[in-house]
Length: 340
Ligand code: NAD
Ligand code: ZN
Ligand code: ZN
View: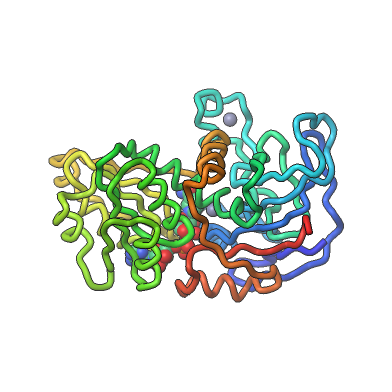
């Protein structure tokens, strides 16, 4: 099977021929149909974060495909079933976080495409308990971006506690942002979309954004305050200054939810304004299996649109360049060919 491998941080990925991986107890082998390119995979390949993966590794945590082989003890999945393999590859199920519905905070978790090989491959392994069945009627290319971009932004809006008629600022209309706009609309919010390219701002309007703010021209804080300030701001742009900009546009009591993970990201939060205005800064990491099941249910009900461009895995290095230059409409999905 073919896999795209990070051999060293910052170097182009290498397409390698590897033997099909053998599922261990509790695991399944998945023949990958589609695999999304999340900006996190670029951070992984560049070694951007304090906790680093260990090359050689296969990135990718939006892999969707068909179960091909069951490891010992797997009884709830069937060969031929479509599953998604998210960032949360495994969690212990026993710790305080796992037992209180916060498995995404489990300290023993294993992350797909980071702590173990991921979805940039024709075949991948998944722990059966964390491989999410994809409901009938959802294509693999739609399911892929939902598996991280979808679940992450859906969860961020839950964490923000968004209610109908509130103003939600979505900063960064990329893979994550194009879905965040839609979840905020589903929650009944008014949405202000912020980006730095015309295409992304147009896409946001097409997907239901009520207000668009061009961060190249407008002061984001002032623009949001003209609408009374945001009840919640979801920071999805890979740029630390954008966090500060959107934080300055919160209304009193508003919440900034940090989601993007720029390299060496450190944000200045003014103490006086935060205290006097009673605002909050919250971090949000992906979502649980239940959150992903809800994301799939919304999509199966026809409530979300996934914007994707499909590419062959061999184009991976060009695709990374396109994402970094902001040229991708929303999400690139690699077509791995299984299932046809
Ligand atoms: P992306 O590259 O598809 O989207 C980023 C968007 O931000 C682009 O549309 C870009 O034009 C826009 N942008 C750039 N500078 C901006 C600025 N100053 N103001 C407003 N917009 C600006 O990336 P993505 O895949 O959507 O991921 C975004 C970030 O979220 C990455 O850092 C990724 O690692 C992180 N992430 C976090 C989680 C989590 O669980 N917390 C999950 C997935 C991804
Ligand atoms: Zn991701
Ligand atoms: Zn745990």
